[in-house]
Length: 253
Image (tube, rainbow, N blue to C red):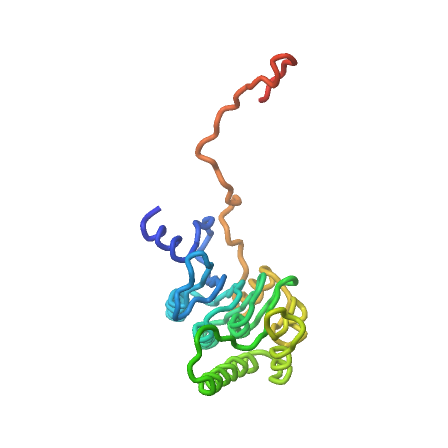
């Protein structure tokens, strides 16, 4: 393994994949953990850095071999402006994008999920809708509140423009009390997100890949080499006979 592959694994967490019959025309982009923006998160936090995602989106747009994007999300949210920046770039791509919410697509992950041309959510996945929160020292409360209110309108406007939910229903979910212990908002599970109009369909990986192939007018092919790729260990120890019990006899083999 060369230094370039080691750097890719260290930065993006991508292990060596099985050999494919031909290069894939669908690029898989993952948004996992917290979305890290202008401030660095603690080392123990699993994070997606937006300075890594944005160059990948630019490369996708400029690469003719890439016909479409499969966007996989399992995120708790994070930086508002970084998340909106990713969502704006996703929706401005000239190539089809299909999003798949696995586990969770919470907070600012919601605009990223709806930014795709078509969206899926797993049956057990959840999406948390809640207002923008601010932590730390606040100087100038009226001005800060006005700024947060404008930012809230940006998030709501983006979600409404790129999904089938109405602004009134979204605000009702966002400011509902009684569901979250330490916050106001709503948790939507699987089909509830579809019924609310946020996500197009309940489905998994196979449905998402079939949809992106349909949008890209691609014919599904066997992606992996034949015969099926299997792991072959380089070292196989010889069996050793070990007595079970000297008094009873018998051996392990």
